[in-house]
Image (tube, rainbow over all chains, first blue to last red; front, side, top):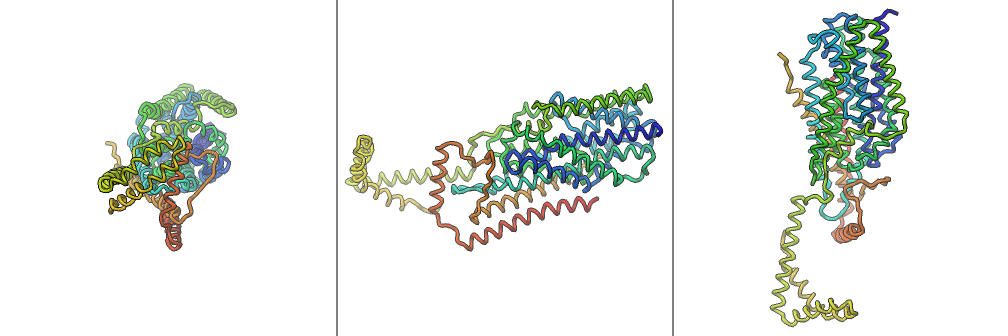
Length: 465
Length: 110
């Protein structure tokens, strides 16, 4: 086996490992809310997410095409020159993911991957090898716009969900039924995750295959075996990652109400699916966080905690350049030391993989939990327990107050017209006050005349509302 | 010169908003009709996190009072309940159709 083939094999192995960690990392994005609201049992939720990630990976390959045919001008590069850079880029992405995981910093696996690739290419080849137009239009701008889109959509959806089911007659509003709906929407998020995240790894493997000449450069679609391998790996990672979801439940997501969770998940799924169709490589974590914040704001009496929001956003902003820097460092080693550099990078990669494995075996709950970013987004919005009344509730209260005033007025008028009854009424009121001393029965008997007057007066004041 | 297709972002926003609003509206309306049909959804779970969760004894008394007051109102007739149930089912079917339609558009667009 020549060096190029060896590096391709290493790239595929690393890419699949990255895919596995991506599934492992993001299971909770889809399934934490339905588990938190009691719609699904954890085991069922994790199994469902794994199957739907598998299916989703086959639905669309647009994002894969963006990664393999867009970010890097691979047609202008020699395989011997570029192949080690893909390898270095993957190491940059995995290292950054690992670091953020250990330190509990908000991050995005997808942006770590892009950052690693861009950084490695910039140092190992040249800046001109990067297609900045595609990077801006398909990665940077969607990263900025998609969470806002998801938040706006979730805000509108939550408002509507509450408005449609709100009742003023004191009867049940049936919002418990949103828990059933969450099974559907959480499944959609898992499916959407498959359509976007599995594609990124497919794109990297396809890029490596094109670089080494094992796939025609004009052929953008990934090979069927690549789709199968990536789909199965992300599904496996999703299934294995399930245990972390249970930990997430105690981390703030329990405040998400069923109607809110339903709307947030629908918004997440709709935004990711629409973006996947256009080939935008998104971070599902960012979109899910945007939706959770938007749906929180959609509840009445909510207020944004800007400090929490800025902490989350600063973590996102940092991911691309930071992963790029790590990728660049890995590429620098390969560029300077040649094959020895590849070996050194490989040793570092194995150490990182081992570290990740050992970390995943530790039975410890830390801020670096897989869902911490999205769970934290739930705390970015403060919802008052007693929110301000709706305009309709205010109108009903006003009418009630007017009615009471009219009643009192009618009572006073009746008292003027029938002084005898009023006297009895006053005496009755005094008797009620004396009821504590055992005189209540007598007082109620004497007040009956006054009560009749009040009833008659009420019937005359009731008009059309 | 970097060319950016801004219309693609607008289309993503439009598609996401339309899809989400349709799904949420049909589902929420279906629930509302289900309640009107006298089939209030109840799901038992370890933690009740719904907005209507009753926490204090005072709240329970208030809810019972409101329930008794609501019970005094003229109940819906059997036909009205049947119609409401049929509308609820139609609404849920429309919600599922909206999802299936969205997925079909993505698969067809490959």
